[in-house]
Amino acid sequence: MKKISQDKTNKFISLILRHHPEIINITLDEHGWADVEELIAGISKTHELDAEILSQIVANDSKQRYSFSPDKKLIRANQGHSIPVDVELEEREPPEILYHGTGEKSQEAINAQGLLPMSRLYVHLSGDKDTARKVGQRHGKPVIYRVNSGEMFREGHKFFISANKVWLCKFVPAKFLKVL
Image (tube, rainbow, N blue to C red; front, side, top):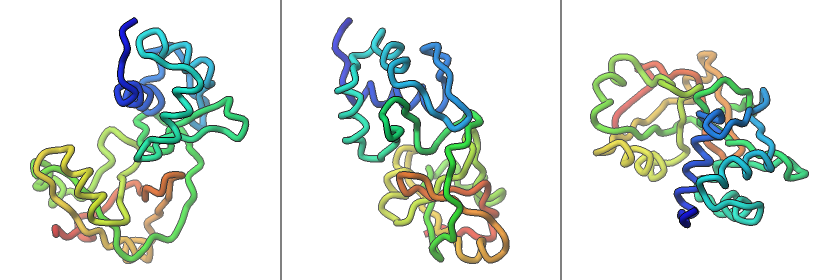
C-alpha cells in the first residue's frame, strides 16, 4: 500500500463517519459511534492507519471533527452528518448573532429560501466572521451572512451546539439573514 497523507486519511475518516460508513463495511450506532478497531481495519486497507495515527488525527484536527468515547473504544464525528444519527447535541440559547459562510453561487437561493441543511441534518453556524469566511471560501467566492440567532431563538427556533462548538439549527428563515 502506498503511503497516503494524514490529511487525506482525515478526510476519508470524515466521509466514513459522517456520510458513508458502508464504504468500509462498518455500521454506526444510533448516536453515530463506530467501533475504533473496525474503523481502523476498514480504513487501513487503503490508507495508512493504526491506533496511534488515529489518535494523532483526532487530537490535531483543526476543526475538532471527532470525539472518542471515554474508554477510546468508540469514535464519532461531532456534527456534519448526512445520515440519520443523534449525536446527543446540547440544546442551548445562542448568542444574539451567529454567522454562516457560503459561496456566491448560493446567495440567490439563500436570499429567497433561507438557509436549508441541504444534504446534512442541520444548518451549520459559526460564532465569528473569520470562521464563516473560511467555510465560504471552500465554495468559491465567499459570502458571509449575519444570522439574527437571538431573535430566532425568542421566536421558538431551537439551537444546538456540537462538541466542537459549531452552532446548529434545522433551518434559518431568510428574514433572519443579512449579507455582510
